[in-house]
Image (cartoon, rainbow, N blue to C red; front, side):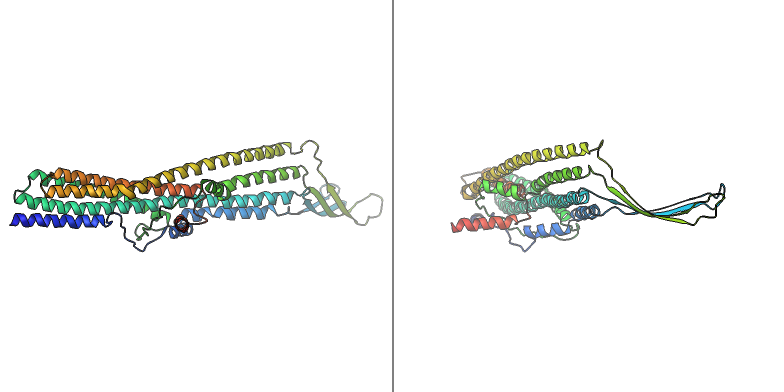
Length: 444
């Protein structure tokens, strides 16, 4: 009677386990209210300490623009001479003058043009930093979510193995199975526990780095929204490549580099004519002539204009440098267009390939593995299969689910790479974009 009861209890236990598996226990994830990816993006752009410091480069460029538009300061010249140390006859001369340099050929305007481009370049530099930072945040965000799912898989497998160890021990006590069966089940349970511990350590490291990026201390709690983007069809490749060329900050920086080269060329040509100098002054003096009555003070108003002539130095070197810089900037633009197109295409193909692999896991492989475990358990209950068959089926199932989660993680990383290659997260969060694409696919 006890043996029969334990056999029925074992079967009931296994039926409960497989009902949980068949009902999607390995697929389901808790929809805990936490930080979503788009919220994390807004948070990192606002709170990241390194990015906050880097943004001052724009203020520096604006200050240089202000300085570039300022005219030269005037000069006050005061001079005098007398014969105090010589004849001391009272002869002297004193003068005061204002001198002002006047830029010609639009030099200040050309300087401001260069400085304006530098402000735009500083802005694109910040956008590029934000793009790279968002890429790292998204990668670590999804890595934590995948690790959470892997840990959940191990938790369920450990729970199943714990029940298997208990059932096997009970059957060993009544001599239904050997000690080898008990030890085999225990070793499998310990293996799963060890692998879960390693995954937990990886999660701690990833979450700590994510907190650092978000500007949070290690002691502050951080819960993530585990809603993953659906397996929606990707936009056309040509559309993604065009989008990348239109909005990527490094492409904008390359175009601005060409603009700066043209502005530098105009400035170099304007600097061929150095500033003209105008001086206005008042001079007063008295001359002493022996044998003649004292002379009255003489006063005179002076005006002078100094015009440097570009005869020997026509700024040829700066002009040639600016021309070469412009040619180099155009070549960089063409090279970057080629590289961006290839980068987007490579990320697109990888995301598409991994998406298909994830679909194969979800559409058949996982269900087939569940059925194998169910058949192995039924054979074990009926005495037709040894426990090694059950353990082998369970191990295959655990490895398959872990491989599925790893592939899912690679797919998410590929999506991040594609999004980064097409311009980053500035325009629209990845998750919202994927959901919109999924809704469009359903409507069509």
